[in-house]
Length: 420
Image (cartoon, rainbow, N blue to C red; front, side, top):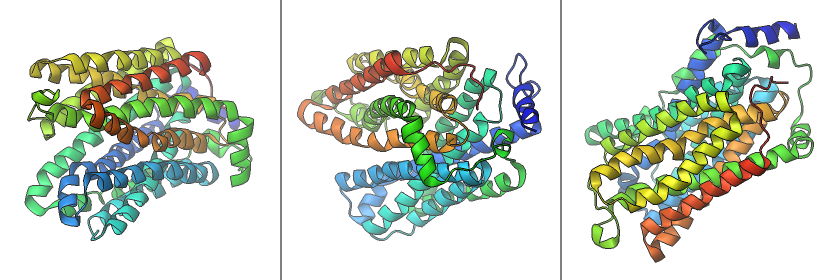
């Protein structure tokens, strides 16, 4: 029986093109993971799109609104751990279904918030579901598609990040003028419908079904932090550094672009519009997708090093550009390198940990890094207050360079590894 599970993973889509010969089950997991991640990011980013309207209605200042976003990001770490454990214990598809329901309900409740306390609680619920969906979805796809194409498959799934970000901007742009910010969050309830599709059409991976033992929570933690403690530490270290670069950079790029020329910025008036966000996501989507092809061809380490080096070098060039048109065009390059490396996390972590703790490990390392990186926007903001936003952005280059150094010195190469 175990051999038949392995045959399913290897023979399906094992031809020259990643989509050739793919089974119905493989396409089902791909569709559910892609849509789940896209809607996950849409619900996560809806808050950012309407933050000024919420602040006006609830009397929040920028610092308080930032705290709400930071709390959401930190909650993703706990969501990754909780739903990751459920994915290892009761199944990837079941956990994914529950996480989608969690972030959908949390998003809808945000529209009913009348106080800061209520908003904070509801955003934490969103964060728990967002962290959990990535944990379950990445394990589901990793275990269903063959090693030869794993990087490419997960890169296409990761590209849903860009689609979800753009969708959040479009939803806000359409709904706010018509019905106000509260109804924007009501739209965020729609992803719950995907949970019914997952429940009906997505089966558990054979490698998980054929596993004889299901670890308890304490056993899972022991495996994660002791038996595979080195891999956990390495993964968390370079993920944290990379995400500090990402969140520090992309939280403050809109503010930098809107900064008047007299204060050291380019003084653009288009930055916070839907058009600008969509333009940036074109570069992000290209980065997500091409990273997977590079990782499957050259290896995980080489792909990470290329993208981290590109990020560290492109940010200073971005800050030096004065021409508005060139700045907008080069923003695609910054988004390409500064976002594309996200596609490497899922396949790399899947290959670093065994099936018994895979979802928990992927969820904890990825979302743990994101939670710690919640300090980056505040740190860059502190530097911006003293030295200007442009100077603050330069600091993100250091985070990207640090991530590259950790990868170079410590990350094991796992390209082509069969899952165990």
